Length: 441
Image (tube, rainbow, N blue to C red; front, side):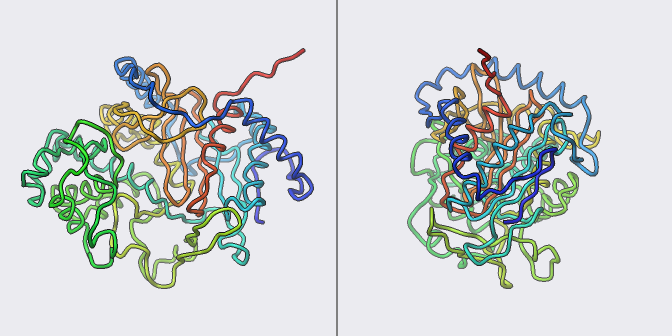
């Protein structure tokens, strides 16, 4: 196991502490009453209050200290108001996941006040026989691609190249039919188009039979909404964001992946993030293999052997990144759309991204918070106030940010099928984000 943590405490042997780990982890979970939240009571979200809070949030963050190179310099936890004991317990939790074979490996990054207070790696790249996971591994981030595509769309909305109210049909002819004509760009950004997550047909049996994102969008336009009338409900679907990628390309007149690389990744200094894996790229040796399975039955189903997993950029699930790079993206949102003093995204766009629109069925370990969705961002709020935001990916990558605490946690694994997210959320919540006061006798 390759393992290091920034902080004052030396690491202890994991194998000799299993009983302590289990006790501590269970204690942390019990203390926050970690339950899978049902969202039936989310109807009263208090959106007006949320909007005022988001405006205040982005205004104050944008005038503060901006991320710089190196983006997140190391600091001792206590100097940033973080308990080393809390980080030790979080460390033990993730190490325990590896030892129990709940995940194959993981990289964990904790950033407080734009300072790295913990950066650790655990386990291996491949089950049983793989190399120890290394820091700054490049992961398939799957659905964490969605917020990146969404921000590119927001930039074009800021520039009036696109409008939220645009019918998709004015950009893509395949949507100009009775089934799909009512779908707008806003419906795509909020997963309220009525397009399904899956459907019968060639798309779901053979991606390799397509060679461009426009063909994927045409498939969905011709199929049309299958679940409800556009705007009436929420249903999370890759179709929305792949279609958005095709619209970005058509409206801007250049490949959407090039726009994202030049105007977003490069602007944020995300030099280890890729829209597509390409032969000859020196970063390929750092790309993790992709594992699937469950406890004790992991197998690697893909690794780089000269051919990418997707043969062209997929804007709902196809990008690659590192924990540090994705933290740069999250920091931009925290900073109200600014990077090193330059505004690359308007405060109005940040407000749109962070405005709850729909309750979601996504479970969360954040006690007492409602799980909802804005414009391609997962939100956690209470009484209309945004407490945290972030996104996850189906290959088990996660990123969370707490604006009021100036805190970010990124937990990347390549263990598709693992079920550690809500436990991580519960422990992070109780130890770092909203620490439970210790009662003294």
